[in-house]
Length: 277
Image 1 (tube, rainbow, N blue to C red):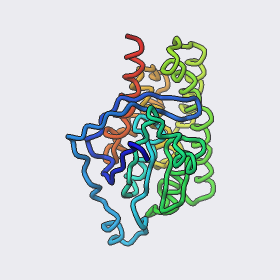
Image 2 (image 1 turned 90 degrees about the vertical axis):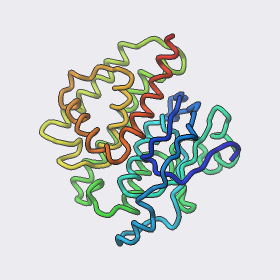
Image 3 (image 1 turned 45 degrees about the vertical axis):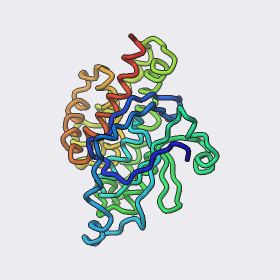
Image 4 (image 1 turned 135 degrees about the horizontal axis):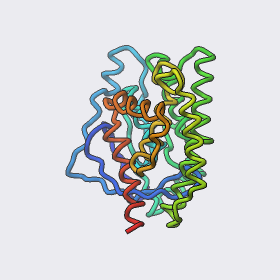
């Protein structure tokens, strides 16, 4: 697909460095991505073969993920895959070169959004749907996506809150600034703080957003907080959120929090700082 790059990689390797740019208001992020080829990304140690030897189902072949590291939804999928020990064939889409609008990509995803997944011909877009699919198809247990109807319903509510409220309000504040050079909107910031306050209340008496255990909802929401931290948004008044975020950094450290999430958030934030100069 043009100059798209495809690699089977360990997505928690240290070799991805990127300067990125978020592009649209419908959850699509673009990037002018610089991949340091001198830093080899390790082949995924927890390979399909090793996983099969432990007795749980794995993909017939590596799952192809069309992605951008600076895209928060891409990062949540990548960390979920790492937690499940899944080998990913990562395909970087250079939107500045129009790779998201080629006939091939549009046939696969008419919305031309990332992330987009191809699991042996099964195409799926929208990060939260991809995360749920990966868990249902390849999860070793139900810890990230509980089978208990009430617990699962709570996970879904949190995912919906992220998609329709928290993530949306984050975008309403920062996308105009990054794309159009708009000034910081106090009104949009107040709306974002309102969403963070709701999240803060959800965390009352809970270690994680949907209960006492880490779930897909935490992984989906944490990428928003990572961006807010990189963008120097002050969320300290939301004490439960701040404590949860620090807990999540430790929980996800073995699964690429620094290499995937922090690196992407910092690359995105660098664009805003560049625009201000």
